[in-house]
Amino acid sequence: MNRKLGAEEKVEVAVNMSDVCVRICAEGIRKQNISIKEERVVQKVRERIVRKKPCHHEV
Image 1 (cartoon, rainbow, N blue to C red):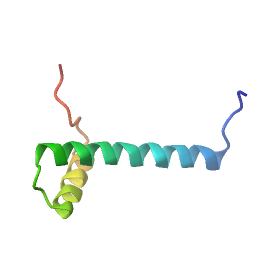
Image 2: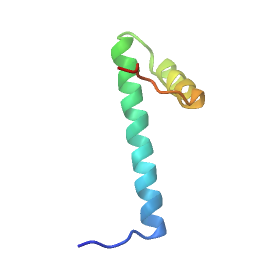
Image 3: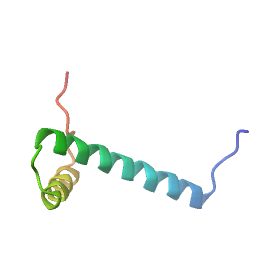
């Protein structure tokens, strides 16, 4: 079953992938800052997205 995705399906996949990336980023922030408030998590995620730099350290 190998078919091409339609335009709506491509948008849905892209939105889902973006959502997963944001959730992973937020979880990383929470792990680094155990007592952080949710509004601060949102703020830090936004800062990381706007910064457009990787959130990890190069190995």
